[in-house]
Length: 399
Ligand code: PLP
Image (cartoon, helix red, strand yellow):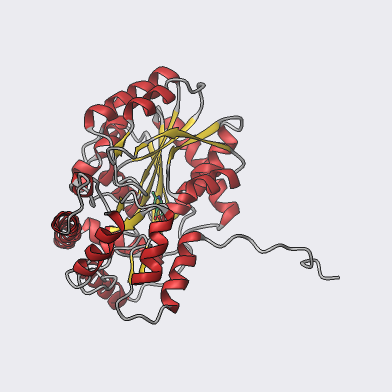
């Protein structure tokens, strides 16, 4: 018999399954609010001008494609640290932070999770309730028990901060706490600066290991303000992990550009930690690909391209905000009585609408509007042409 004869079919990825159903839908009015991708007002994934320019320059020089170092491109890793901590951070000056290029944010989380399993095998990992659906699977695949801490308050569309903090304060020392640095996925609800201070204090008091997931730097308020949580941890003197993704902020989804950063206590510690993280990488995929990291590094280190990128990122951020505002206004005009301030207060690409799975199903069957069954919609998939149509359908579902 075949060695695969008894293999069972794994469950379909809920979001990728949604894409397949959307692609098969023949209605011209269909709208896909399920995916976690930024689309421009024409409904297309943009190729940023700064990226095009960096790619053109790279093509011009026709660089050879030798292996990269295990930890990736040094200029890239350096630029990532500056984005996270600020150019003048003592962590950078003291060489206390280790950054390795990774295969997107997911790859960074995976390298971090595998390394954590070596460092602190008995820890439990705590993720927000709800969280990006891959967090649980990824940390479980690395061998951890995964639990949740309260996060979303359905009544307000904001963070259930009291419950979250109370839970963090009950966790045993050495617990790993996965925190969304900004633009929480899936809810769009973020902590305030003052709340972050309390989370940092709780991590210190309880001896927790913070793992910040930064997949949307620049999508909420801007590159610097969106790093506020990371900067608070950086200033705290604690050790922590950060996964960065440039999939969204550079619109380079398929190039898999991300990074894992570990903040240690000293330069000496950093060198030893890097040597161990490199072993994790070496035994997984040896070293990262060249193109995406080289393009991002070129943009971040050229003053002109950096300026252009910041403008393009600001345009994406502004367009998302306009869509949030436009949606909230249209829903109110259509008689939705619920307080809709959460739509404009939530940040980043996603919004939790409060729609039930049954209402989401109705949106799909009657209007060809696809959303995740939890009621999460991708606000970045709204545009000036589909906004009225979506508002009509959502208002009917909400009233
Ligand atoms: N973390 C969060 C919270 C995300 O939303 C995403 C992407 O959707 C990722 C990580 C993964 O990013 P990447 O696509 O770069 O692997």
